[in-house]
Image 1 (cartoon, rainbow, N blue to C red):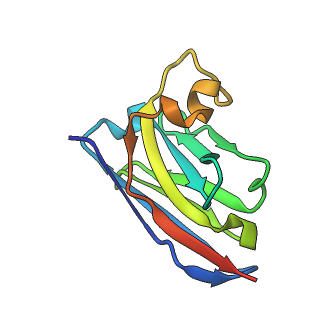
Image 2 (image 1 turned 90 degrees about the vertical axis):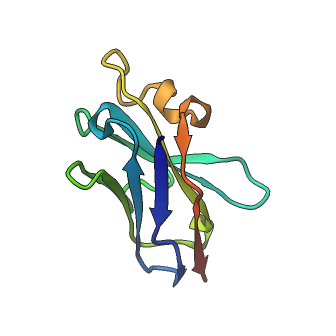
Amino acid sequence: EAQLVESGGNLVQAGGSLRLSCAASGFIFDEYVIGWFRQAPGKERETVSYINNGDDSTYYADSVKGRFTVSSDNAQNTVYLQMNSLKPEDTAVYYCAAREAFLGYSVGSRYYKTASEYDYWGQGTQVTVSS
């Protein structure tokens, strides 16, 4: 059974850093794309970043580009989201999710950007950035 478990969420001051972890099990890790999504109260779920474990290609939303870094440890079946220069608008529940990677899809494919295309989800971890 596929399972994703996030950790690392916390309360941090603006300008601070956090590292989120997503531990995966139950599927072939290096054949999957692992995405990070976030949802703030009253807002739609937003794609933050993802990594294709097959070729290590990555994507970042414009709102986090240059501040967040996604990485993968295939030996540990874990994906990380390093978040620096945090802003109050980064406050949200952060979720990791997984879907199979396909050779025909580019890193910017809508199939990887769209939350509904992901098959497995973690329970979420709260990130709160105070001003």
